[in-house]
Length: 238
Ligand SMILES: [Zn+2]
Image (cartoon, rainbow, N blue to C red; front, side):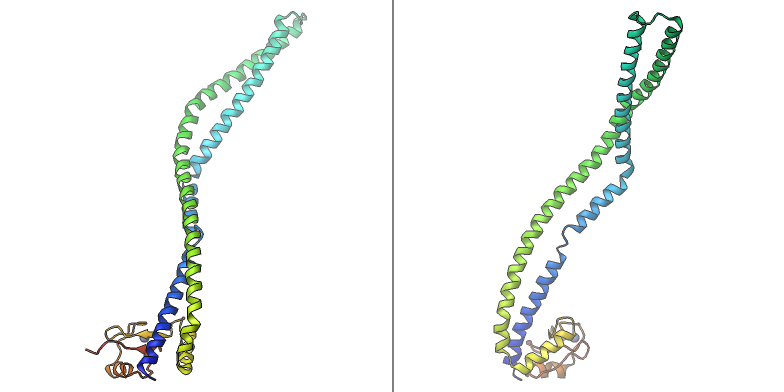
């Protein structure tokens, strides 16, 4: 094999490397998983605050409704009592008892409503901070997704371009050398060739013996003893 052949193979290797990088970058576009996890964490960490605000607001609304119901009943009973509708003394007594009971209940509700007038705004204020943090994350997520979609489109275009270039490069390479490269590539995680960097194998970092580097410089087909990739040496040996 000649050095020129190895150079052609190196071109293909660099193309394959960039294809692998594009694949890795596409795989790293996670659909916003990281931000979604952050959103979940905010919700979990502040579950009590959010639940409190919700519960207290609901209680306030419920008591207000019930109070309105009591007021309506009171109005009705008082109307009956003072409207002269009821004249029977026992009936009057019964209605008076009802009115008293309703007023007591109304009193309890008012006490709690007074407490809630302080509790609800405080709880809402706390919840507001959490909700704002969540809203911010939602914006971040939407932005990420737009950017990720753009990046994906771009990566797909780059991938397509490189895949179209590949057969042309393959056709220029000696078939037996390509077969060897492809075999190693399939076997060793998609990397079939290593460029010697200084004295080290560019793929695994192992020091390459001088005689091997010299052989590689002469255009011989040599493999890294550690990671079994085809070695290409373009620089001189120190
Ligand atoms: Zn190696």
